[in-house]
Length: 176
Image (tube, rainbow, N blue to C red; front, side, top):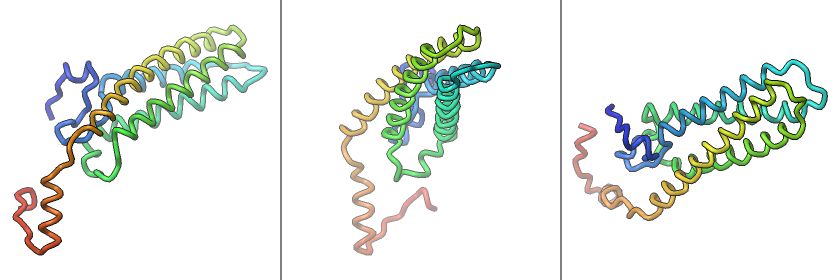
């Protein structure tokens, strides 16, 4: 598989040759790495009195890292082409939007309830950084989702299904 690095930098979907929108590789990797760094920072907190902010940040950063990592794996390995029933651009949009909102909330709560320890301050900084990355990713996901809605329907799939329903099955070279 040949990667188009200039397309990755502007958020062009990985696997866009298949007609399915997906995550841009670069912003997905950056978001996953920043989520993991934020999670590592918050895990080094040894003592907390009101731990609600720490626990919320732990949950959000770990969840975002896992979900984004799974989607990154799916798109990198082109597994999204095996499940065309899933609207992958909408899945991307939901992941990036929810991660943006939850990271922002967790970072604000942790900033308000921290004890000025270095690990908590670093986690807040990385939390706001990853919020910005997910925010940019959300903007790009909205663009990809809107472009996906404006594309005409695949007429070849419609014609193939219609002729198959009539019993006039045409030869499919990918199956031979």
